[in-house]
Image (cartoon, rainbow, N blue to C red):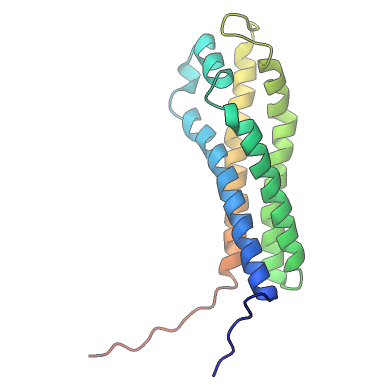
Length: 175
């Protein structure tokens, strides 16, 4: 008879850690994907008052607080997962690549989005700089790039699981 997996053993820890990593990454990616979807159709047709109202007065209120926890959590769990599976060459590399993409997304946020957020905190729909579109473009395009980077990171993490998924043989058909 085959051995049953240990309920509390290292295999279960890695599975649980993978689950948490993938969940946090998917949720973080989802927030970024929202920005990508809203970028495509109409945001560039909005006038300053509408864009500032939407951006600063409600639509993204929880993105900063919840998003920060998800983003940092996904990076830390991905790095922790890489450490747990460091002996598995291909899986380790894919996990590290995934963590690298997530870290890159955070760095881009710090470099390009956070400064715009700091500026936006001082704006109102009736008081904003004449070059407001420069800030809008930087904010919107960086969010779109972040979404793509997080999709790549999430994909690498998924592939890290798939390379370890055993391929099963097809059972012969019964006639």
